[in-house]
Length: 206
Image 1 (cartoon, rainbow, N blue to C red):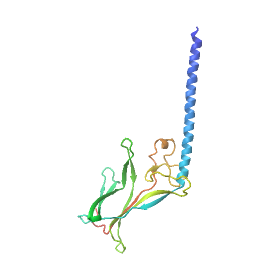
Image 2: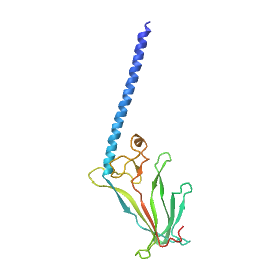
Image 3: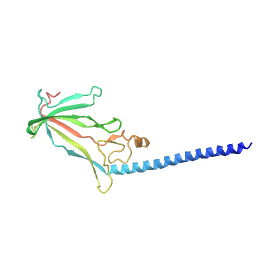
């Protein structure tokens, strides 16, 4: 008989704790959502104040291989779109140095062996017989980013990385939203390095 009020008080206390926990969870979600929207607005402003520029690496002069070609192209069997170009260069004191460029470049993130893939834009061009410079060579333009207005925030990360926003765009990418905050690696690559392999004759290339 005396236990009934105690049970009611215990039940009311349990309900009060549950309601308080739900209210705290809802408040936390609202605060987190507001922070996400604020961060996305800052990201959009930074990206709108960012432009893509290209910086040229030193030109690599290609050495002719024993079969008469200047490079060898190989395709990954499991990924036909992934192509590697092997070549050799002759540097100071006639030192032959091998080199490779790939359409898909993998870099470690430093977390549980997971690797991101960065795409490069690679083309092979036959040197026109009337061109002044007919030296077989590899030209590499690396993409970088610069602020449009240096006094305002701009994107300062790796332009090869993937982002949920496009340069100069005022809208979110396809993967923006809550999931983009948790998994930011599924967006677009901001820009690609432009690699050109120039050879005098394409008839003997693989």
